[in-house]
Image (cartoon, rainbow, N blue to C red):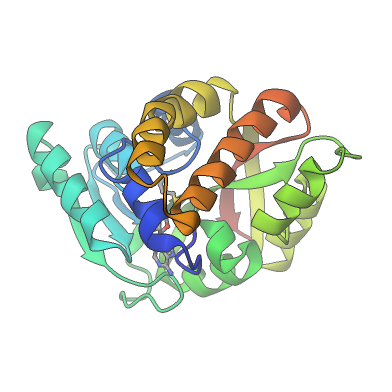
Length: 253
Ligand SMILES: C[S@@+](CC[C@H](N)C(=O)[O-])C[C@H]1O[C@@H](n2cnc3c(N)ncnc32)[C@H](O)[C@@H]1O
């Protein structure tokens, strides 16, 4: 979900109050976190493009540290704050309205920078280069991003993905971008399919039905719904070609 989308208000409505706005699940967040070594006892974590903060809550719980959760859409942050209180994690989460293209934090202030399903908005190289200054020496950046898992994706699926993620590449291409941005990949893994089917798409499906009833006479809203339905159908058919990969990164020495 990028804030550049002209049909943004409908997209936001579709996802409002849903647990997450992109593929992922607690287990994968935990797996990625378990790959980080020699962390301080209470790490300070910057979560960029946090949405309603499924991973922010997981990180707060797993790390016992402080998660500074940034998004440029206040209703997602409000929902995250509500969930943090319900889960008794409010002292471990601090939300901040901000733009990932122009973040204002002190240099060297975070042990970990986390971006699940959001670095595509700024682009891997630009994101890593811009955010690197906020990371303390020896810290980690952890991102998940869309990749081609195998070549020769069939049309029209390929064009659909390219229209959504114009700079998508394969894992080797991502690793080159990472190296060019001054980082080394310590580890990576592909997000499991249930993180799409169960955790991301399942809660959206009933919401789509309500949304289509509400907006049956609104062409723009119906186009937003149709695009989401196409994405879900394509994932059902072509998940072996396309997925998300978690990358665990450290600055190159
Ligand atoms: C695909 S969602 C991922 C949300 C969450 N990390 C997850 O996995 O559920 C991308 C998020 O980035 C946010 N976003 C879009 N453009 C942004 C920007 N320029 N600065 C900060 N956040 C932005 C959106 O509001 C949205 O919450």
